[in-house]
Amino acid sequence: MEEMPTGFRFYPTEEELVSFYLHNKLEEKRRDINRVIPLINVYQLEPWHLPKHSGDLCRGDSEQWFFFVPSQEREVQGGRPSRTTASGYWKATGSPSYVYSSDSKVIGVKKSMVFYKGKAPTGRKTKWKMNEYRAIEDFPASIPKLRHELSLCRVYVVSGSSRAFDRRPTGLEPPPREAMMNQEIYSHGGARELSESSMSGESYAGAPDLEMINGLENLLEWDKSLG
Amino acid sequence: MEEMPTGFRFYPTEEELVSFYLHNKLEEKRRDINRVIPLINVYQLEPWHLPKHSGDLCRGDSEQWFFFVPSQEREVQGGRPSRTTASGYWKATGSPSYVYSSDSKVIGVKKSMVFYKGKAPTGRKTKWKMNEYRAIEDFPASIPKLRHELSLCRVYVVSGSSRAFDRRPTGLEPPPREAMMNQEIYSHGGARELSESSMSGESYAGAPDLEMINGLENLLEWDKSLG
Image 1 (cartoon, rainbow over the protein chains, first blue to last red):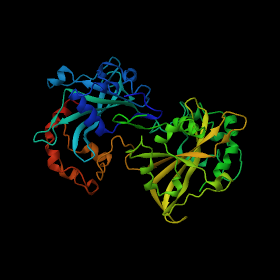
Image 2 (cartoon, rainbow over the protein chains, first blue to last red):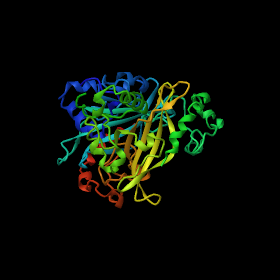
Image 3 (cartoon, each protein chain N blue to C red):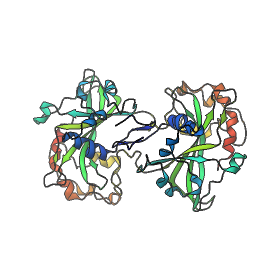
Image 4 (spheres, chains in turn blue, purple):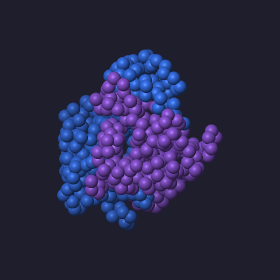
């Protein structure tokens, strides 16, 4: 595994996480897996300290981070695992769900959690979330069984934008969809002035200044070719 | 550039598309770029024939496909490009928007299109969409200028699920969120029967059969440890 070319990053499907990464780790088959997903006790660290521990092939990812998490002693013995950190706690959200293979087999179970700051049950919800995956052993077998030794966690931050793909500069909130449609930055069929009010709203702190955008007006010709 | 490890795929940011791929292509700097984004006239092919032409490092991607598109002669001369294929046409949607660098500079312009089947203006909208990117030359300069020789297109399919990450098996539509919360597949604190109705709705064609799911009931112990 080498350095990745520009734009390539770890965006696994859940099937890849369970069938490849979790299974190979459980069977201790591939040592280089640690370069992608390291083993770490995520519940001993604050969520915001986790990104710097991510695998060296995923360093620099800003959206999600993956870790193998050893089961706690108390959990192996049938107890409840401790998910409390120094500053808060992880709390389950919704119901667990299945993970499917592309041929529609159930291959794992997924649990989602949210990090709360403070003490339960009065903590404040944060934007830090987690999916915890466990593999199902020998499925389909007569008695499917969860592999409890190890889970795989995907830690992520809920951002306003749904994808990192078309993210805007930090602090530059996208205007509401309605405003987007009506704004005059690109006027159809002419070089109208950019409406200042459409760009200087409070939620638009950090926006490129108007002069810069006015300088782009001659790019409007491109717009004429709109189908 | 080698074969990618499992789970690594081309998920570029718009900044990477414009600043690295489009600029390097315009300057003919790196030949191996074709292995990621090949040059092809996307407007001469039906959208569903495009995926098989994607770069060999992106082969197998099922969500989005990237191409460099040479400008048409008529377009270079200031006319409207033809975006009509044998079975339909690409039509612009919304207004063009800017592409920003991570330090909040405007580096490109993005136009979004939807493919319609049939003849304009009465075609039927399909789930095939496209973002077309053009680079801004020498920005910030006194007179920013769009590079018209070449655009970079991201072709993608709008699916019900927002991400390929947690996609379900084909034909297996996720139940509405409400139902998800109430379903009895994982009962809290006991091994209640799986409610048949929750899994056999019409929209749930192709779901794993009930016997398979009932076999998973002993996995519920895991659920007890929910925080």
